[in-house]
Length: 331
Ligand SMILES: C[S@@+](CC[C@H](N)C(=O)[O-])C[C@H]1O[C@@H](n2cnc3c(N)ncnc32)[C@H](O)[C@@H]1O
Image 1 (cartoon, rainbow, N blue to C red):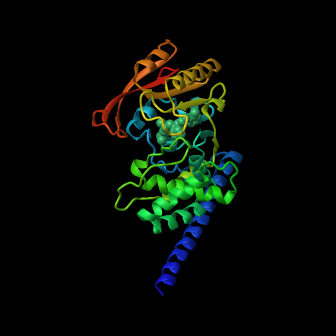
Image 2 (cartoon, helix red, strand yellow; image 1 turned 180 degrees about the horizontal axis):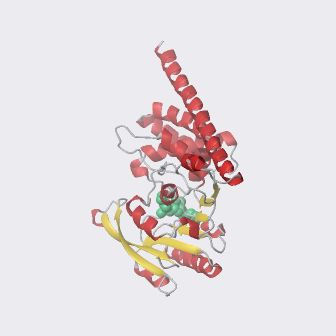
Image 3 (cartoon, protein in one colour; image 1 turned 90 degrees about the vertical axis):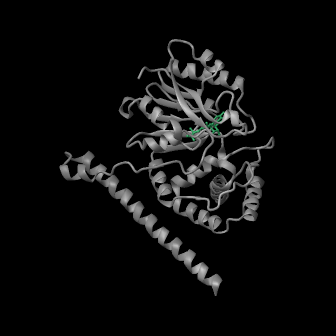
């Protein structure tokens, strides 16, 4: 009896969610018909009043190196939305700047080398209701045992090259579940590329916020999302690129290749090339000797800002630190 009661509760929640999802979908299409109406005729006051404001969004994953503590600086320094063509984020991670900018009409290109992260963006974009069903199941079963079982399942498929559509849905859900229940939201892999973070000590981890996932989904509709090395990202003249690589002298084990001094130099050569092509760019990095030296040319503008660092075992390295925001335009 208890089991069937539980099943009823979950299936009716899922039905309610599906209904809510299709209601939202129809409200999306009604907003686009308002936009169509605006394009096809003179704007009337009524349609302007009804045009929806961008939805409030925040990242749906926790991300080491996420930009919460410096988001105001980033927003203040980045160029205004109407001054460039397309928006690019080739180290997207949790995508704090993208989500909080809530672009109203900008075409955006988001990418990262972490394919499991990108599967989760993909499912948030194309079918948030199905992703939420899986997340609800994982949340319901959450325990220490389930965490380590989920981690094993996730690792098992971690290096499989060919993914069926259903597999990518499971991986996306497992990825978000592990991210929200592991130690500090850390994504760290061993030399075989397997996720190896232990469970965090949360009493009641918040695994997802349904409304936020639907809002993120709506915002992602005008984006292209891909698994890519940043070097394969090719913005053009008058596009704007925000680059947020692993920082110099900081945590860099996002993937098995790491990101050392040599990688910072290769990135610098890529950035110089973007600058030559007439792309506007903004880079965040640590305020270190190497970074200052690389970007010392007067075509780059260096802004020094304070941020809070949380991932470090050494207490001497936690707390405030200096960061650099580097642009090739004057604000
Ligand atoms: C500092 S984090 C980005 C944080 C993000 N801005 C946020 O708000 O959460 C750096 C990201 O770079 C990605 N990354 C590392 N090496 C990369 C590469 N060669 N090409 C593309 N992405 C890479 C990592 O997977 C990680 O998500």
